[in-house]
Amino acid sequence: MPDQAERSSESPSSSTTDEAVNRQQFELDRLKEAFDLLGVNACHWCHKYYRRAEPGALFDAGGGKLVCYACIPQWWPQCCAQLTTKEREDLEGKLVFWLKASHNAEVFKDPAKLPDSSQQELHLVAKCLECRGTGKSLGDDTCRFCMGRGTVWVIVSRKHA
Ligand SMILES: [Zn+2]
Ligand SMILES: [Zn+2]
Image (cartoon, rainbow, N blue to C red):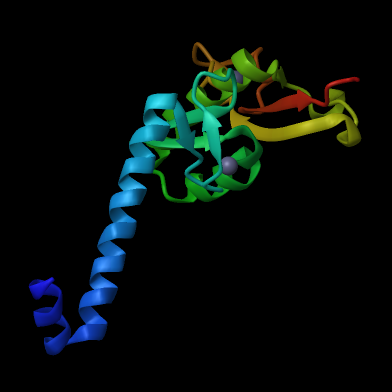
C-alpha cells in the first residue's frame, strides 16, 4: 500500500496514534448509537448503563442529563450547589415528584415522625412546595403541609423482603 509507506516516512508514530484514536472514537460513536437503539443510557454521574424504559432507573435532570437512582444522594447536593434558587426549586420539585411516582417516596412534615434511619434507603430534605419554603400559606397562616417549617423530608423506605 503506497499511502501507508508515504505516511510512515513522515512521522510514523503520531499518524498511527491519530488513526487509532479516530478508530476508537468511531467505534465509541457506533456503540453509543447501538445503545440508543436499545434504549440504554448512561448515568451522568457514575456512567453505568441503564435501560431507559426501566421504571425509576434514571432521573431526567434536564439538559440531556440522566442520573440513576443509586447516584441521587451523591449527585443532588453537588447539583444544587450549581443551580440558581429558581432552577433548584424547579428541579427539586421534579425530583420529589419522580421519587414519589417511581420509588414510593413519602413526604414527612415532622422530622420526629421519620422512619428509623436504618429503614431509610434515601433521605432528602426539600423545600415545601406548597408554601415555597416560606412556612406560611395565604399570608399569615402556618402552612399545614410543612407545619410552618418550610421544609419537608422525603424518604424512600427500604423494601422489606
Ligand atoms: Zn449513577
Ligand atoms: Zn409549607
